[in-house]
Image (cartoon, rainbow, N blue to C red; front, side, top):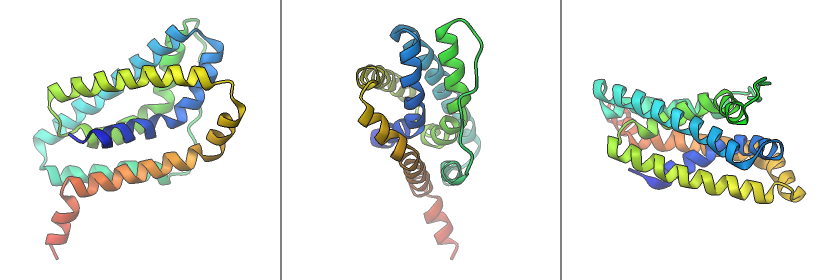
Length: 187
């Protein structure tokens, strides 16, 4: 299991949502935003792991490398994902639905190939580490939420950083799975 890849993937797929977290933390209490965010993260990690395990069971690892094209596609497509208006009274549910609507596609596309070859014990480790990291990031976002210069930097460079991370993760999966080596062996 490559922890650096998992952490970079996590940061990459959530970078866009960190902006939305700034807004949610200004509007709702910290505990509610944390719970909604963590529920969404856990749902998507478990879905990615489960789908990856099913595919890994039926397909050779090198063929799963094709999944590395998903993050590259996500980086290159030109559609911006916007948070949909949610009309619900619970801040936890609002945060959860907002997270799922904004991040589901990216999380599944990037985490599915990354988590497809890990064990059940390792997914628990991943969930624990990413939960702790999420809590720290939410606290950090809460603390820096009022610093205008940081908001400006994220606004200016956040999208390009996200795309670079997506492409990097995709290329890593293509090589790490053995797909590139397998294709080269055909020639």
